[in-house]
Structure formats: structure tokens, C-alpha cells
Image (cartoon, rainbow, N blue to C red; front, top):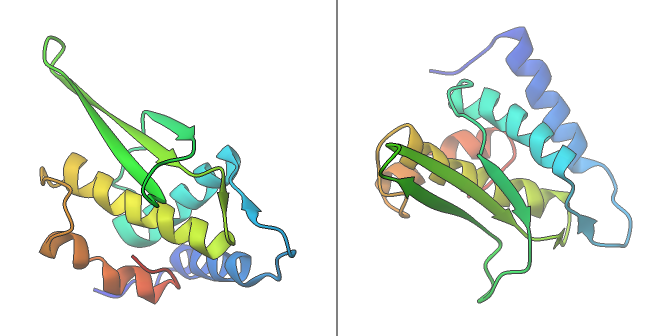
Length: 138
């Protein structure tokens, strides 16, 4: 189902305009406010606002070329689960940052909303078309 609401169209235009702005010659510095802003936009455009935010967000260097990751903590005594987002402090540009955040949001949706493992499986790749439609990639 292709969305055509005015709010959807406006959010999509804002996202594309923000990502196509000429950036400086410096790398993009990740900011918590941008994570929150882009999370809200992608959540509306791809997940129909059904995705709850990450419990915690950290900016940190990661090993083995990892661009971002979702960490899951299960609290059996409380019967709860928490999801942490780890992102790099710097990306080549804002597009790479947004692609990475969207990628991790798909993992979060798989685990929190679909009860899936969060692996790169058919469910994960089924979001490629939705992301491509708004100018993002897995």
C-alpha cells in the first residue's frame, strides 16, 4: 500500500531535502538530536509510527568495520527486554548516517515488533523497497 497523506509527503520531502544538502568537506558528526529527528521521520515513513524508541543510545567506536548495532538485554526477573543503539561518532556524510540508522531500526522492528531474531533474513530485506522509496538503503 503506497501512502499518499499530506503529512507523509511533507515528511518525505523534508528527509530528502535534508539528506541532499551540500555538506562541508568534513565528516558528519553524529548528534543525539539528529538520531531523534531521523528516527521520528523514518518511523513515520517506513514503520507507520509503530516502532518504540531505543531504550538507550550510545555513540562509540566499534570493531571490525561495524557502522551501528542493536544490543538486546533480557531481564528475566522483570520479564522485560531493553534495546540499545550503538552508532559511530562520525560518518562519511549524513546519508551514510541515515542509512545506518534506518538499517538498525529495521533490526529493532524485527526483534521488538515481529518477534524475529533480527538477522539479515527475508523479513529484513523486505524493507529495502520501502527504504529505497524515501531515498535510503539498507
